[in-house]
Length: 448
Image (cartoon, rainbow, N blue to C red; front, side, top):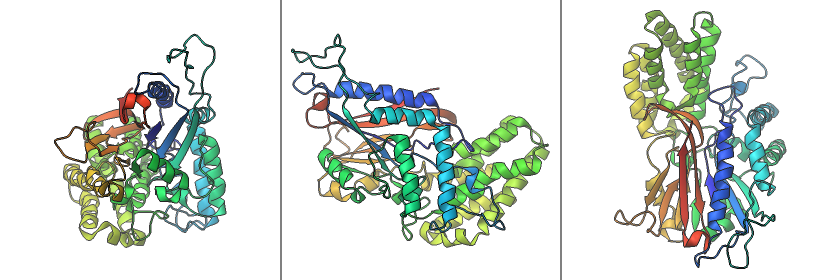
C-alpha cells in the first residue's frame, strides 16, 4: 500500500494558523484503518500487509512562511531573503534556525511520523487458521513503514546541494523518520532510484505540481531558486502585518491586528486584498482605520514593485500576468478595496496556488501518453480532485488512467467558500490483490 499526502505546510508559528495536532492523530488512525482494509485480499482472505509506503509530495515543512526572513533590513549585515545566494552561510543558518523552530512548533506531528516509521503506531491483528483476523491474540503485526519526502514550492530549500544543507536534511530526516538520504530531497522522482522503482510498481507518476505554475516556479532558474510567489509572500503578505503593527500598534484594535496576521493563511494567496476588505467591513466602520490600513498596504506594495529582483521575475511569469499583478497591487493607491478585490479574484483564478485544475497537465505526462502509468498524482492547488483521463463517459473508478490531486492539510481561510477549514486529505494506492482488488482510494475530511 502506498499513501500519498501533500501540502501540510508545517510552519514555525510566527505567521498564520498553527497546525491542529488533531490532524495528525486523525491521520494515524485513518492510516491504521486503510492498512487493515488493504489486508483483505481479492479472494476474501485476510493477510496483513507487509509494507506501507508514505509519500510526502511537497510543501510539507514550510520555512517560507516565517518572519525569520524579515527580521533584518537591507542595510543590516545579516540581511537575507529566500532569493539571495543559497551558497551563503547566512542563508543556510537562517534556514536551519527556521527549520528547528518548525520542529518545536509541530512536535506532535513529528512524533506521529516517527512512531509510524518505527512500527509503533501501525499494528494489525494477525491472521488465524481460517484466513480471518485474530482479534483475540495479543500478537500484533507491524508492517514495514517507509516515509519518502519530495519537495514543492514552499520547501524547495531542502533540494539545495551542499554540506550545510545535508546537515539540515539530517535533522528533517530524524524529525519525520524519513527513508531519504541527506542528499538533496527529490523534486522529480527521477532524482531518486527508490521512488523510480516505487512509481513503476504502482503504475504511478507523481510530482508536487508547482512546475505548471509560473507564479510559483521559474523554469529559467529551476527548483533551486525562488519564484515570484516567494517575493510576493515575503515582501507583501508577510511584511504587511509586521509593518502595520510596527507603525500603528497603539491605534489598532486587537481584532484588526489579529485579522492582519491571519491574511497569511488566506487561500488563494493572491486573494488576500479581497479577504482584507471583507474583514475590514466586518470589524469596523471607521474611515480612519481603513485609511491607516490602506496606506500601510500601499507602502508595502510600492516597496515590492520597486525591487529589481521582482522585475527580473517578469519574464518567467509572462508579461501579461506580470502586468496584471502590478495592476492588482498598484490600483489600491487610487481605487477602493472593492476594485482591488475584483482584480485579485481574476488573478487567483488564472494562476497561483488554488488556481485552475492541473488535470490538463496530467494528460500530457509522458508516462500517461505512453500508457506506462495508470495514475497521475499532484498536490499544490489545495483542491482535492479525482478525474478520469481516458474518457468523460467513464467513471473515475472504472477508468484505466486517473488524475488525482491530494488536496491539503492545515487551517486555511478559503475565499471561494468564505469559510475557515481544518483540512486533511490523503490517497491510498493498492498493490496486486490488496483491498479486495481495488486500485485506489482517496479520502478527504474537514473538521473543527
